[in-house]
Amino acid sequence: MDEELFKSLLKNKERIPDPMRYKKETMHYRRAGKSGLKLPEISLGLWQNFGTFDNFEIMRDMIFTAFDNGICHFDLANNYGPRGGTAEENFGKILRENFRGYRDEMAISTKAGFPMWKGPYGDGGSKKYLTASLDQSLSRLGLDYVDIFYHHRPAPETPIEETCYALHRLVEQGKTLYVGVSNYSREQTEAAVNIFRELKTPFILNQSCYNLLDRRVEEDGLKEYALQQGFGLIVYSPLAQGLLTDKYKDGIPEDSRIRKSGTLKEERLHAVLGKLSLLRAFAKERGQTLSELALSWVLKDKAVSSVIIGASSSAQILENIKINPSFTEEELEKIEEICK
Image (cartoon, rainbow, N blue to C red; front, side, top):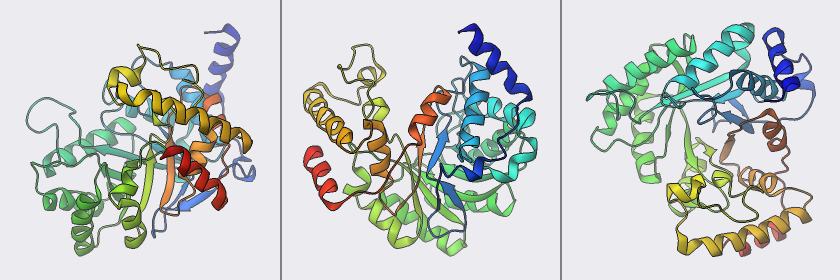
């Protein structure tokens, strides 16, 4: 790391949040569905950038940059890191050292649902796993409660009634204020909504993948259902793992994470690269980068309460808050023509 940059980052230990952060007009806020909770249009996710192998001073700098620019929602999960749990540990340390007096200005969310520890109780959607996981998350974060606790993915081996009741009880115990689900289809969400409604549980969000290249929330009717039922969508992967940025404008390397993960099949590669080229040209016409266009497009929908971005530097955060979710009908039609 550059020596001057390192010295600058070390000053963050004595840094305090910018008192002018809410007067910058850099961020707008939306209600999470029909609840009273408001979220910034851009939230910061700490999935793969707050773990064991990341630079702690850069992490701290990103939290300051986000908070000073109106990003007051921070999204975690029990297994974020890597290693699992380290994202919560690192964020908790930053809260203690720099943001002790600012907890009430933050919305902090975490999740459980993927494998976290060995044995039969460290995965899934059981009451035992969800209760133990949130207790562990609160300990790592150094908090008495989180604002939103999600079931991270459907658990076919657990009755949905058990999962929903476990989330309901965690609200009653004061360990979370609101609950949500993540990666649930419309059908799975409907089942959960019916139970939450009977229990009078504050279910407010479904955290789902949605972007210009991935329209599953449209195809299965989840986006429409969210509007009908009064909960919000909070979107992850709005930039399609970097595809909807300039990162791959010269092609996708063989050793890239996208190729290794198998999310982009070889037969689709040529067509996707063609779409990206056209979208990049269209973004330029709007005076935006491709990433700015992609984030703005997701936020055009009333069903979307917030968009979660990941970042590896403060510069990326500052770039990604430059959004303009206003589109003409002609612009939207052109985007659809490109993406079809």
